[in-house]
Length: 538
Image (cartoon, rainbow, N blue to C red):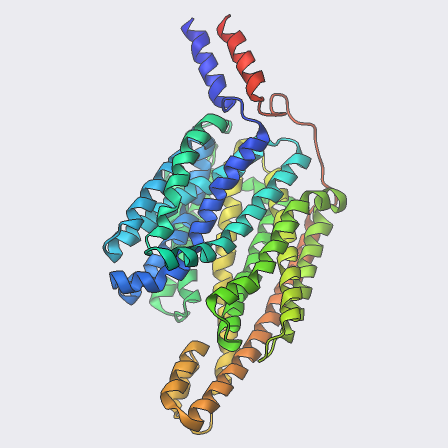
């Protein structure tokens, strides 16, 4: 009797208490929305945090960067751990940790406490993100339906990234800065019991022990590489010890990780996945798409505020069409993928995005709202089509037993591409911007050098100088920034066209096999209950 009871309990957990797969998708999307919002919601709260906690410049940098840094470093660790001990289990622990860390961050009375809380949020995010994709991979074994689910998932990710700053700005107008963290707590209190009731449990094949040493090598290596890339993106000198040391140490640890995985009979990450053209090409496309566009997005925000003199709220509203277009692309992506196949869809997505970027070179010193609207809509649609096709191909190419590791690789590629993009395009922008301020009439050399760091600093120097020299510096800085923006756009377009060529290695058609036995659908509530009652009566 106890054996049948135990078996029934196990089946109940595996069936997620009978959740329909579309209900599961809703729960997973709520999880993703929380993580995506938290990645950007703090940006608008930085001035309020600085005024209240008085952090130093290094502490402030860690407050902002520690969340994505920790999250990116631990994705592979928790993605592969979920394959071993249960993806739902890791997800629920991530929920709990995210809620506790949010409460700690909201009540932080010093910069060090806030940094620690943000680091814990990063750990929770690293548990949640790959688990959502790997569970989605399990409950949607049919590739056509899975493509639709990934489209909804990616659209929610686009919404979360855009809603973060707007939500943060709204909360700051009515509450104190800790409110940007408190919003997570009620959502997590609901997500925990709902997730435990509805989400199905799943694991990989479970062969061999989990490689603890390999997981730590991957985490430490990624931490070093991402830290070095972020320092480059923050303007640190490329040959600075603070940049070179973490990059070299991180790269060395990742090399050791790869060698260890190749020697092991049951590796943490099966590197043979990268021998599959569809998988390796999809990962490369994700990196290249983010590399070409994330840094560009930051520069565009500066253009809207500093050149066109728009307020932060007006800037956010100008970028809303980009988000809406990305949502639309995610929702229709499944139909496009089924009709055109991964190769044409991703390649055309890159080309459409490159065309939008080239169109935006028409941006000048004066506002051109129709141009910006058209360019941002094409940019959002093309980028989402590209990322959707790449993510779907990558996840479909990986075996079900390695879904967590594959999802973690995809999310890590996203984070690395974003970090490298900020560093690379930021360097291109600075190289094109600075020469225009080398010799401005009436401006001392020291002031010109200070103004060459950024457009914001140039405006500060111009205000301090005043008179004709200040006005001349302001005009020269604005013109140089627009020139640098055009050069950066062209470099970004070149990278996107390179991605279009790379995408030609993807499969021509979307191959849809019949679902494996027992994986066609998570049982509906009534069906699951009847099955469990029948089993218990045996």
